[in-house]
Image (cartoon, rainbow, N blue to C red; front, side, top):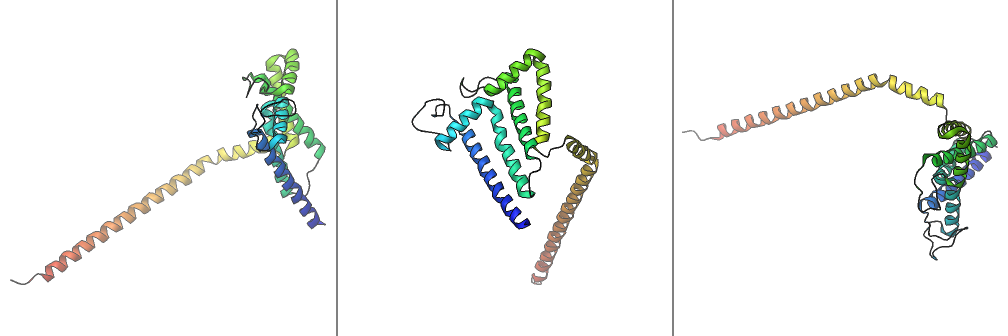
Length: 226
């Protein structure tokens, strides 16, 4: 049974990896002049995933803006988890967390006030992010809306992934606590390397001096007696 589960998990993980790669390709090769589901354009499609990729990229970017790039990242994380474990626990909360994270990031981008991307049809936060940011800012103002959206994004990250702020803090604290010891070890290695180089240089100098003395001695012994 474990073998079947492992094989099935690998197949699902490969499918998720492929889906993430397709999302990356269609997003990075998005061109506003490509024909898509909601707009006509040039006859030749520049998107690397063809007309379907152009339509998917246009839909994602116009809906959630730059937050669309989170989708392939989270798909890759899910694929990696599927490779390493037998199943993804609590799939529904993870989907809810994914939606929360993408929508919160989209609204935060809309609050940021970046200039439009590509052309006026694509906003940094997309249409959805702009609507969410506008509704929240009406009641909470920009700062209050930003605080609420940051909290929602953090909660979505915790639900969608295995990330833990406490674990991240502990790891950073351990890293900074060990910095003096790490610097001392690096300095000791550097000193040992310098000493080894100095000893090697001294040995080469002695070898050259010895070779020179032997050569001079040989020349003296080979001189004809007068």
